[in-house]
Image (cartoon, rainbow, N blue to C red):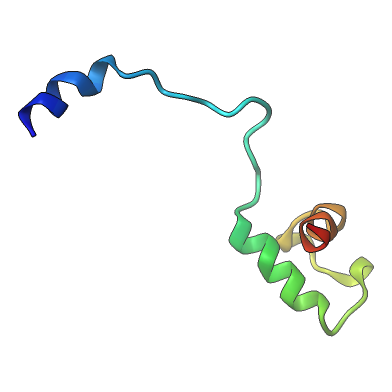
Length: 59
């Protein structure tokens, strides 16, 4: 275990390319669940953009 502590600062941190997400996956999935009883245009903004929620739903 001591070897890991020595190597930890030397490891590169891999970052995903692109913009970081604004909403969490949990919020988007909550929007999908809300959508079951409502049209896509009526999904509340707190769940994220309706196009983003729909894209996640389609995937």
